[in-house]
Length: 125
View 1 (cartoon, rainbow, N blue to C red):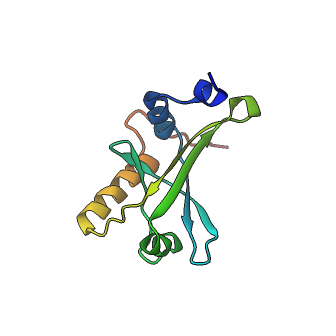
View 2: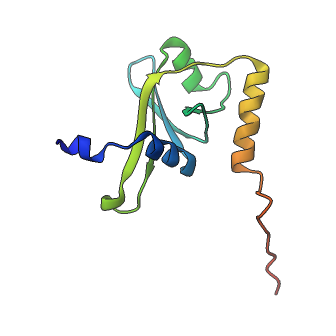
């Protein structure tokens, strides 16, 4: 058995790390062939990462010209704990306003809306 076979994640492990991590590294291809790499907040739709960005952002300009994309999430604070999920494929750009808003709302809920069990504290002097 190869080392790659020993460390390969199951579908459940991949789903868990995507659900747990907050930042997706997104790589597209610039016009000159160099990589364009940016961090994005994201959600998953049917197990696939999805992110919201502006229509004129460099990543969208790149993906309209060349839909190849690689994304990665990582975890671990020391070498022995390092792990990550890297997904290479083709981007699907969503222009439908209702779909864009729905994805934006889900990202908002994931990153900004407090859960009903969360509490706030005020520090008083």
